[in-house]
Image (cartoon, rainbow, N blue to C red):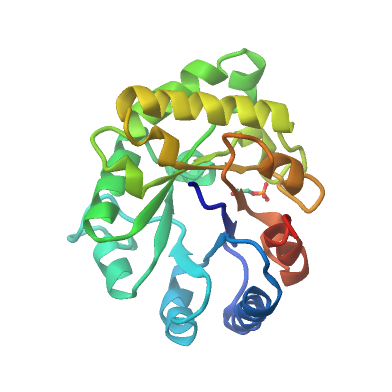
Length: 249
Ligand code: PGA
């Protein structure tokens, strides 16, 4: 049974005070208002990991990072080691987000290495894949996604990973993929994983991300191969995030 998993990605937004108020409220909502079984996570800016995990260690949600280094230690100025993330008790880490691929040249090979190192450190990787608008319009989605899955998920314990399908053209644009397209690609991802890891494919959590909001969440979550969402904009305010995590109520 795949338990739905909704993760808010705050990106480079939200400071200490706002984060504290948001997470306190989230905890309250989770304990008093939730009627369905769901995992919820928030990926915040790295300096917030220590104070927020200390404060909400017993919270009903998971706290994660947005990227990490593809080395465990050494002369990599400015990078964040999976080891230090583990020492901070970080639950999960997003890797391969399209903004990291686009602005920081993160490659499929580096994402694969990061996934392995995170797993070694006991942190759940959320591996993002997705095609650009140009690739989508040229009908290259299948080949692009399959190649990304093949490279990013090579030789890893896939049962401990989460995959996020995030079409680049839908991120922050207000232009969400239709639930039909999202389902088709998430299904394609599951079938590709099945070819690589036949025993695990049915248990892997696959999220959809890209302009998820309170209006489309229900329809997306009703799709057979969509097990959750990776949410940017709509995760920045507790009221809109609350509507998302309560989609099933
Ligand atoms: P968005 O971002 O929900 O603002 O489109 C999604 C993401 O980047 O994970």
